[in-house]
Length: 103
Image (cartoon, rainbow, N blue to C red; front, side):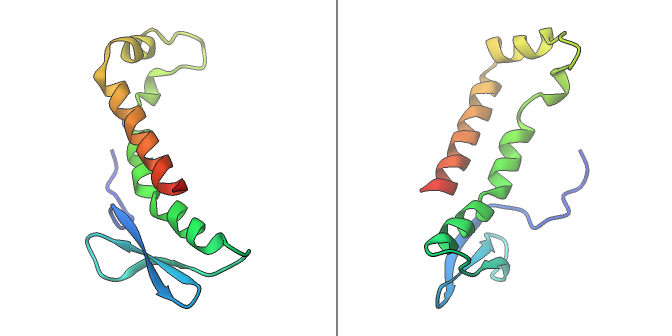
């Protein structure tokens, strides 16, 4: 796997000013990003979605995507799904990221 070039997570959302939210890394006090209103009520929701990016990436990286072939021979992937606690952990990580982005 290649070296991470983005600010590592976890990221969190904090109020950054009037109608602005900041996305902060747990490893730094500076903002990774800031959001401003585009539509009424969208600014906090957008910030939450952006803040979950590292969590979503981690959940996707837990899946054996290289095992899923387009030619239909997915025996290794099926075995992973059927017999591995890793699949359940990946699904849990995905559910946690979705909940963080939408609540």
